[in-house]
Image 1 (cartoon, one colour):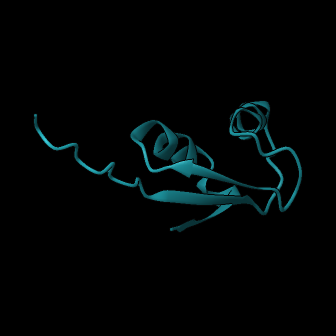
Image 2 (cartoon, one colour):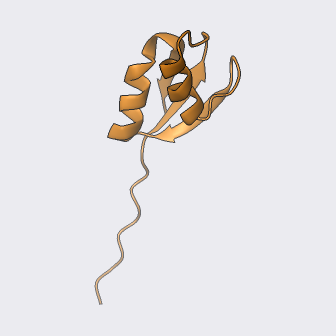
Image 3 (cartoon, one colour):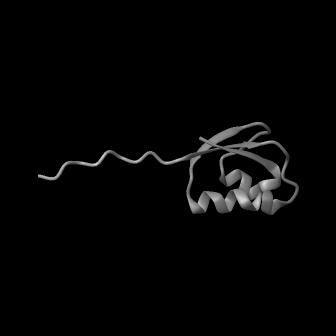
Length: 66
């Protein structure tokens, strides 16, 4: 039997909302990311779809990698 590989740990992105979204489109993106209030923080896996949402509202967020 083949030995099992250890799961590779994904990088995590820590996203914090630091400014309020001004338009409805930006509000929807921020809301879909689970950021409900100012200074709320969420952790996400480093994936292209998450990076795309971050790019859309990058001026409202601070992002750090773990």
